[in-house]
Image (tube, chains in turn purple, cyan):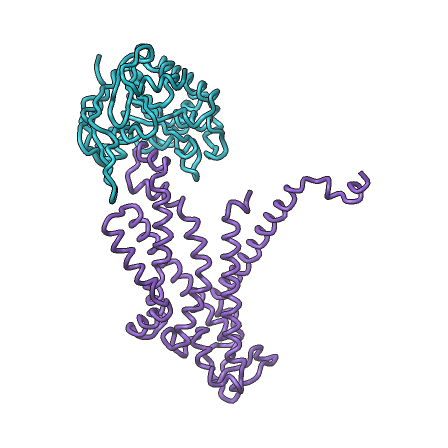
Length: 292
Length: 254
């Protein structure tokens, strides 16, 4: 009795409290990282207004200047303001990544649902093709494809899209197979739905969750790979401001003016981290066990 | 009496890799008469569900013929099959799984009506009526399958099956997943519906519980290893079983 009065938590229901706290943290994290991601998106959308200088304006008399009050992140070898270039580069990096992830998620899902629903020979053929893609190291394959297509940001996106869809096809296929025999789809059939209606109205909303979570987690990875291709000269080409190509451009000056490499590197690091943490949080939030 | 559903010599064999084929259903023939409740009884694995899936065309039959109101639907597809589903509906074994987890019960009940071109307002009204007929309040239309009990969900499933006024209702173990008390409630509901609809509703009642069949059905078929081994009035079958399997079935509950 005495002990209970000194520690009031002992009298509470021990199973209720931790759950409540956990849910709140997941929701708080979700709001926090969504806001950060939104900020990033808005920043890249209004990059022209935000950049203090013209990112392509050269000022050779002020080249390779260290960070100062006038140029917060210094200037590069042509005297262009690094902060402006990093802000301008966000548009190329972030929007091409989002487009890429949207395309591979959509294409992979379509292929996966088709395979899972129809089965038979088309399924076998498409899945063996996806096995081939999955068996190669992705970036090396993307380099080969981008090399064949020639440089440019468009071709880098196409190259990465070509090699990245199988992951989504696999998820969509396994989800479709798991749902295919369920009673609610049979009930929909009996309610007079055509196959197309069953797929769109019933199957698709029920398999969307895991695909969405994978896509969110993939944004960071794809941003890295896109920057990597640009770094290798297979993506965006100078003078276009893109984080990967900016780093590549400055790598010879690493010892004398490290800020030119450091600025776009930091930008990649921060945005990849924000999108990864957002993806992680969405996965936690979508997990029904954490939403009890 | 006129037959609403005729099944002639229906067969299904499942091929298995490296093992002998399974003859799930072998040459099953029967007729469901107008206004009748026909029970099909048999142990698990006897082919009841395969038979039902073939009749509802969720599964293709290998051989045989299915006539619904005199129309051959054995190979019906697309629009023709959707027409057939306006005459034939099914209640599934597990009520909660037979509703889309992401949609409300009302949405599921009204789906067949919407597919047949009824306006949204009318659908809402008809759904509310159906829910009331099946002993639920119209507030259940807005609930999700995981928010209601098994018995309530099965009532909603019955409402869904009755939505487009079918002439044949197939109950595939419709009460097996429920508690014994809820089972009785659902049977009472089905009995009430039979009384209301009289000859316009015929029921095919698939079950493994001979007591329920005796209580509910006009006629019973006993299925064993994919074949129909006995047919007759439930009381006659129970009093003087002719097949050894029927004898064992009755012994097991007495």
